[in-house]
Length: 83
Ligand code: FES
Image (cartoon, rainbow, N blue to C red; front, side, top):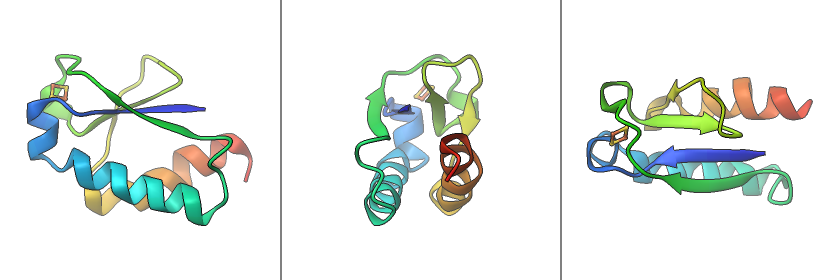
């Protein structure tokens, strides 16, 4: 699964760096490094929704903040993997 986190300037200001590090930690703690590929993405023009995250280059844009990163991980990443 590819999870792309926007690292454009607007999303950066909303905490994309923290979102990435939180997700990285959760992926490692769950032993999912082989299944989840976290990657940076450029601004998609949806800055007001930031921090913008997409899964497998899908249409849907998820708004993830450092304080909601854990919930995103549980609800989207783990659920999709069937974990
Ligand atoms: S900076 Fe993230 S969508 Fe524009």
